[in-house]
Length: 403
Image (cartoon, rainbow, N blue to C red):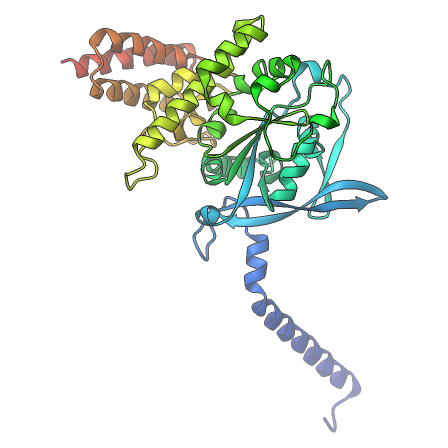
């Protein structure tokens, strides 16, 4: 260094220090790259390193405090979808909104702590998290899946990639908890009826609670259908009680009980239809238990769409998307990203639906009735011109099948 001017020495030492710090940081990052990858892996996006698809689960820690207030506290756990069948977790099936009679005119802003940040949640979800069954579920199961929290609904790309994964999440869950909400109109909280996860039979339910269960909006919502249908182990929760699932499965006895205690039969028919659909699915599951393919079971596309036609959803296109996981080896894939036009999606549904029924041996008269249903089912998705094209397509398909 002898002979170098002072500024040159200072510059040399500064450069050496920066280089040393950079190398140390690089070494530290290299040693921690595995943990960073697991934390920062974007949900639902294929990793360039391991080519796997990820989903987010929740771990309930305990009550957390922020700004002097207490909140339910969760941390995120990122899991590869292929690993879901190796862990125990609960998936919540519920409607985002409260029952219409219980909605607040001025909804309160309810919040939880997620990874240290406050997140607003709907009142119905808050009701579950603060209910006795909710507390017991979170106490007895370390991991949960709650779609409104685990999927960032405000980011379209995340929604498009995550929602198609939901059937896999519910099918692999250790237990599906169905939350029907709280009804405080005539059924106030009764601590004496609160139990741990031990169920109350339908016969023992207060009549007003039974009516709340039977008339619940849950049974009319499209997206809860695949969640319940795919469930292996179901827990029904309402108010601060757990309702016996076995009693819900005996549809004949349930119908008789409802006729005695519920004066409006039409109000509970949606529940009966969904339970019948669930029973049919479980029967196909039993029939195909010996097969190697897990997804060999399923319904005809036409039969699945007939169920979808009776249920409520915000977007007509989702009547198709939501039911595709329940079909029998249907080659049509759910398209939440609108990669295909509405007409092309309907074209696939019309052609495959007709072909599948034909191969099932349906009569020509049954085929024409089915064609009329499928065209009517697709109409809300199509413009006037495309509706004409769809009708022409069905006629051409029928003619080619019976040529």
